[in-house]
Image (cartoon, rainbow, N blue to C red; front, top):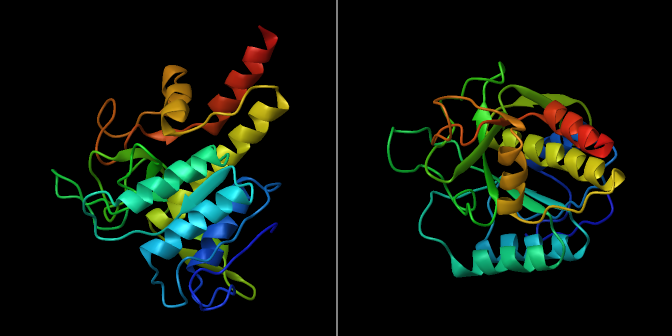
Length: 244
């Protein structure tokens, strides 16, 4: 951990367990990453838009390359303060923000995605795959803002104090995706490639170079988004580019 602030007035220590579990997933994916642990949800799991936005901007100013947000509400129109906070985060040097889509299932039309996962112009909203890494979890929210899907079912990770616990949800898929992006950023920098900035640039990198596994119906769909990012394909692609 290189930085951490409490935006809930409940103390920085995790008294809930959700945040610790998510941090464990991210660091398992990218073991050499440095963590910024801004607490924007209280020990009861609630938080304010003001606190979440402040935590997002603070993390960016502290040097975050990736911001992973395993939180959300019931959905609704965009909140201008949320979008402004994302803009400030990218201006401060963030490469990509990822957010959980939510766990409201999907009814076949419309959207069940909450904010901030619905801000598809400002982040990548992540759906939850079952343990086969191919099938969407029934509880995973869906809609036009879905961008990618990642493993989030029965994920064993850290719990406060010590030991391990299994959790399921888009909250678990989100830091898996964020950790994968951490690997990509590290590889790109190590090989001399410039950083990607913003969801559009990351989409162009993955989709134009077929660095993902198309899941569900062919092409994009509201449950899986574009599918599962294939980190092995990404690594091989970057290595091949250096040989050209």
